[in-house]
Amino acid sequence: MYDVVYFSSVSENTKRLVEKLGLKSVRIPLKSDEAERFTYDHDSVLVVPTYGSGEEKTSVPKQVIKFLNNPENRKHIKGVVATGNTNFGESYGLAGDIVAKKLGVPLLQRIEILGTPEDIEQLKERLNKLWELQ
Amino acid sequence: MNTRLISRPVNWNKIEDPVDLDVWNRLTQNFWLPEKVPVSNDIQSWETLRPHEQKLTMHVFTGLTMLDTIQGTVGAMSLMPDARTQHEEAVITNIAFMESVHAKSYSSVFSTLCLTSDIDEAFRWSEDNPNLQKKAEIVLNYYHGTDPLKRKVASTLLESFLFYSGFYLPMYWSSRAKLTNTADLIRLIIRDEAIHGYYIGYKFQLAYNEADPKVQEEIKQYTYDLLLELYENEIKYTADLYDEMGLTADVKKFLHYNANKALMNLGFDPLFPKDECEVNPAILAALSPNADENHDFFSGSGSSYVIGKHESTTDDDWDF
Image 1 (cartoon, rainbow over the protein chains, first blue to last red):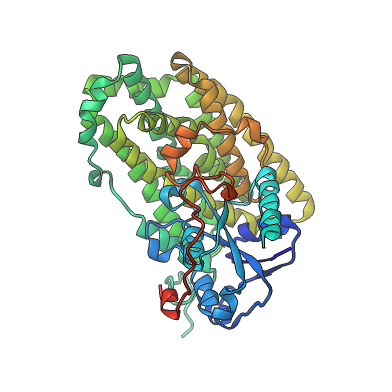
Image 2: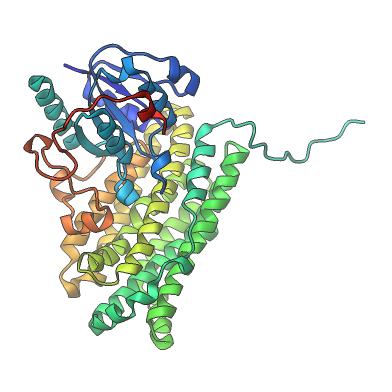
């Protein structure tokens, strides 16, 4: 199974979601300079939150950008999961769209906040399918 | 000579909690005023609504105005004494001000679309409606209470749950291509409320995690109890408003869905099971044009997933 690489702000909503998956997971550091040096060389799915500003330019957390700037990191990302809130309208999970498009990998799912039990089940199924497809 | 420290100037170059700065930036980036939304383009559409539909819309909007009034003048301010940082205090002033902008924006919709006599009637209705007054009473009671954790819970439930019986209607009209400019304005309010709910919920969780397990258990129980108390009243309020149009069942699903999100903002598990939260897809689409793509991405249908042409990325791609 793929590992999970995720970013979560100090509010830790995304962290809780990831913990419910019960997969091996690593967290991209909160500090930008640490995120820049952070590497992970196992094939993984990236979970990225969107915090909802009107501007596309700022929707991908800068720590995730730093992490993905390293080609060695991004070649291991096989899929993306977007967390967010439908209240943000068109920006719901936007960071996930942007990163998935840039990486040329599927956006597996959008999930709100911590995810409901049904969201988690669905995501597990999709991760299994993605794993079997490789 | 020693001076006694009376007050400290807020130093934004020394951030204790990065969420304060992040939320401040998002709220200020998202700043808007109702005058920017061309609600007058809805005048013709308003005239196509039947009298009871117009009346319902006005009642819903005075109900929302009242919640924003409470949140702007009492709710947000009641969080001030417990702020953990001076930056949080600044964010709270922004939240309070935006609630007042929201409250005023409904008046701007009214003055554009409605007759003064109808506006007066709608405000009278809001003062006389027992379920709406009850809603205010429950929340205000906790805002005036002494427990800071409970104030935050009440505030988060107001921001993330209580508004939605009202928000449903402009989304419903928008899904039928009616009052679409008004819906744009409401979407701006909805976006703000999400950040408010997230932020207050986050500050709640910081304090909650420091509390001893016994207090945590009590607060958790209180949260579900308060939600159910508000929910019971909300169901009556909803039926009172929407029965005539046959929409009550649909609104209830929207309430369940948002109640779950409010709980998640507080870090608690959702309460309502999936089949009670299946929001009408037209409403979800009106709320969030991107959100209806929760299909199986392997099916290859839908616009969010297109099996790719592959193209190697270059470092320039990552220079956002």
